[in-house]
Length: 292
Image 1: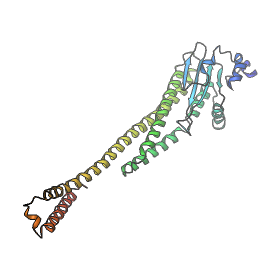
Image 2 (image 1 turned 45 degrees about the vertical axis):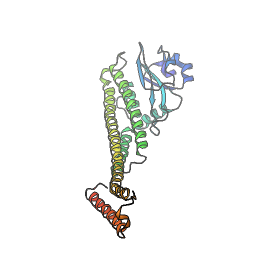
Image 3 (image 1 turned 30 degrees about the vertical axis):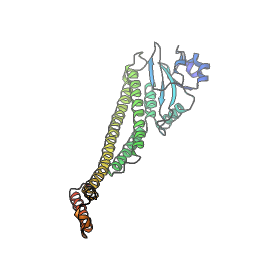
Image 4 (image 1 turned 90 degrees about the horizontal axis):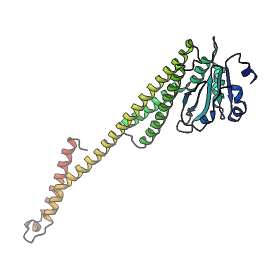
């Protein structure tokens, strides 16, 4: 807090909510952060008269459909403060400390690296999602459609969650680049543009994955319908084979007194032979026509 009061360099502060309530007068941003408590469900940024305030809602990359990591932030020309209780913001800052070296340190570069830390491993994750969808597509093409729909629905849910997340990050990057309050140096606004373009590429990939899930779903329904049609064709063929046999048995089942065939010694074996011949002929014809 002593360094912040000196105002010699732009600062990065990380506090929890109780610490922020105790020390918020030292930040001198003149804002009410209660509206950005960690109960939100989306990443957003708001331009105030003398600050930028907002929150991040970051999906857990190990469980995208689970609870998001949510924390708030405030920015002015003097620095940036994160208000976070679960340690996710600290993890990103430590990642920056370990992996980034700056020739010209500045607040804009730190914000860029922090935003990059949010999506650092996303390209690898998206490529793995694409490979998983390719495997699901191969399984469907092989005709193994059982339990595929549940896996596909789970993948689609993850894709939609990430699609929404990337859209929110793009809005944050664009708002920062707008620099309405003139907190940032004009020459450094390129950092925010670079981040926005990177996330737009991710969103392009996620849109392609979304289209692929829809194609696999349509392919699944097509294969399922094809499978059902084959079963119906088999049942129809069997019905057609037994239709003439049913007619013959019905005809000779009338048992009229003057049906001469009833008193003929070779009548029964003849009818049996005729039925077998008809069944064999139907089977051969249907087989040639590939009805089953």
